[in-house]
Amino acid sequence: MDKSYYNKNRYYDADVTQNDIKLEIDTSSPVYANYEQDYVEKMESIKLLEEYISKDSVVKAIVDKIPTTDIKKKVNLTIEETNKFYSFCKIRLEDKFTNIQIFDISTSYLSVEPKDFYAKLSIKFKELLLEELEESGHYKSKALF
Image (tube, rainbow, N blue to C red):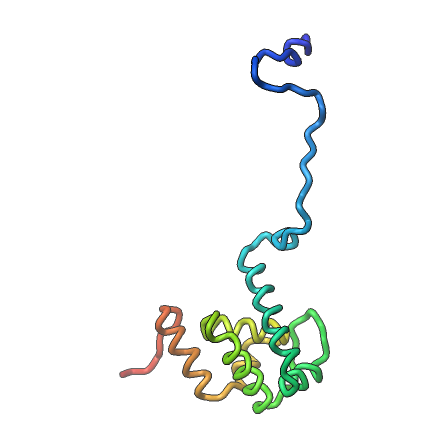
């Protein structure tokens, strides 16, 4: 087949070039590493929490004693430390996030299993989380009345 037919500029106002088209990925985009927008938003919220923690010596001391790793693990925080940390997160992030999101951000930041973290929370915090879950329709109480 004669390629010259396709190479001719048959459209009066269009530019036809024979250069290869190169597409490059914008690696500076935060979405490049993970294409899920939820992941990007979560990482931004964790960075925000990190900024708040760096300015508070009490919470920073709690966080500093935890070994760093990317794998979820059992962290030996006391009940008091767990509640101090969660209370701090709740106070700082309350105006931007829901209780469930704050819980998720907290457990993600510490790289702990959510069930272990939840087990050490005070009854008041557990009640607030359950109320929010019930309101959103994600939890139904098994109480008879």
